[in-house]
Length: 130
Image (cartoon, rainbow, N blue to C red; front, side, top):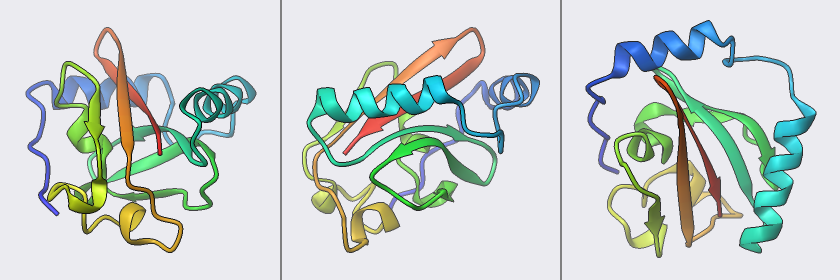
């Protein structure tokens, strides 16, 4: 798996995550409903709303996955925050960026992975349907 580069705005992005108290926060009904809606729209068994800090990708809301997060080095999110457009991995099992990720190698692994990022000033969040 290739490790994503660090974004040029990393310190501002991390400061925004901390300022909004997004990391390790309690579940939020609205975000859980948004994850369920994303799974329905994408017609996929897994949907995530995640945040990437210095060391990990934390799954704030999740549908169809028990895992609470992955190391940043193994994350899809670290790649998504670098892009200005949706990231679509047609087959993550064959994409060198993601093939070794626990999200791909797990028993309930998924191949097709569209991922979208939303920006709010300096904060970047993303959602993924798999």
